[in-house]
Length: 76
Image (cartoon, rainbow, N blue to C red; front, side):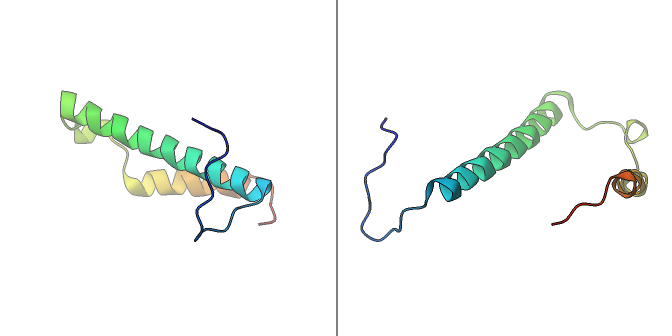
């Protein structure tokens, strides 16, 4: 497969930085989908986890907010 795809008349080519950003975003989304797929495969193979083994969403939320509050401020 060639690195340079054939130009399609109704598309505007991206500059290198925009193309790299799109590829990075695609890789990030693919990684997230892989994590979800592995969780679903585990549930299919072993069943649902017991409620006692889980974490309440409120506790998970509060822990995440505490982590965020402890980080250095960042500019978006």
